[in-house]
Image 1 (cartoon, rainbow, N blue to C red):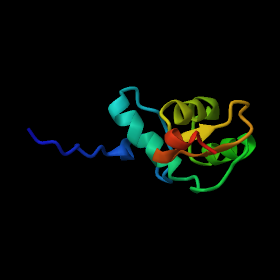
Image 2 (cartoon, rainbow, N blue to C red):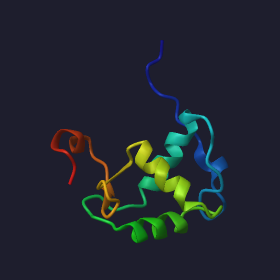
Image 3 (cartoon, rainbow, N blue to C red):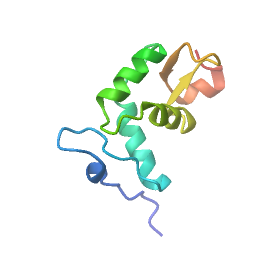
Image 4 (spheres, rainbow, N blue to C red):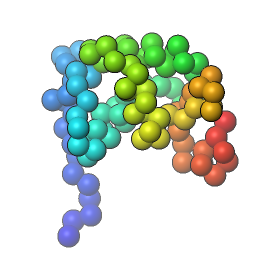
Length: 100
């Protein structure tokens, strides 16, 4: 059995300017879309909620930054403090060190 993961073509979920036009339902296609969106954030930078929302709004077309922000957190692409005051790009060692 081939253990290499099949690369998912996310272009069907993007408009002509590279903005996310829809969030796919299956996790196997949702994760590449979230990874694409997470790549729009700088690593090693702390964001406030307003900045996170602004970045998400720049990269989607359907006006629901709430769902995208929640998915980025749920799928562990972004981390945040308990009070939602600070956000950052998740790293593997965040789990070990307890985050920022």
